[in-house]
Image 1 (cartoon, rainbow, N blue to C red):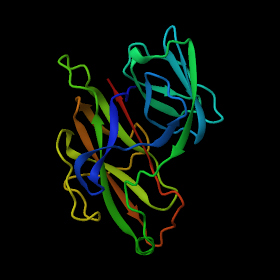
Image 2 (cartoon, helix red, strand yellow):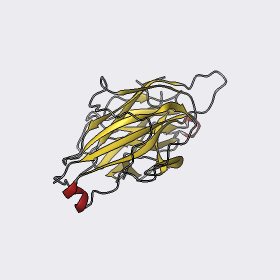
Image 3 (cartoon, rainbow, N blue to C red):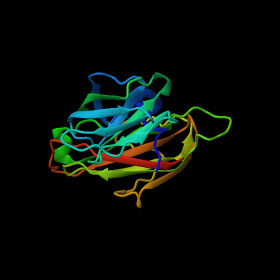
Image 4 (cartoon, rainbow, N blue to C red):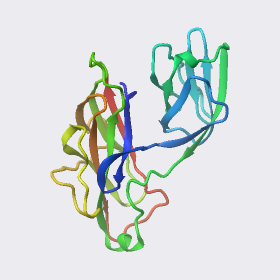
Length: 251
């Protein structure tokens, strides 16, 4: 399974519009002493707090462990430009690699402070919405960030997406795909976030088996994914109204 070139991006507004330059990150990462040639693009499911990233030469490989966890299997990175490295806990980092800048020493390690961030795909639930109930919509982009290649070898195949975790409150989220699937188009811009996007069908998707199939995403193209949040009347508000999204692909 590969998601090395797939990345989420915000739309210019929560109600749709053009793709923005802002990646939709899952967690925040502060590297105390960066390792030359290795940069963190994103990561997910890591325990917050201080983890450790380790680089070893001959052959170049890297491993990761999050707070209070164990390191996962080291990943060889000599011929890669992007790589996902896992901790034994299941958390992972998405890294960009430049082998020309690797450290000359045999082994280098650094501390990485992991934090949670608010992605704010939806507005906060207001007290009135919690009382009366509401349904709202928002969208984001799933883009293949790989460069266009004459060999056409950067296509991501069999791209799927699903909601792995619902919020802790009573609200329920579903996902749907823009019927145009992949391309360089702009998402529909809704006049209001309580108006459903045209021709988008929403589904409950809790596992990869029930996920939505996007299919192929060529380099520098994207799919638009819509979220529908249903808030029942007399809603039980939760401290954490976030949801967990996951996607997979094969290259």
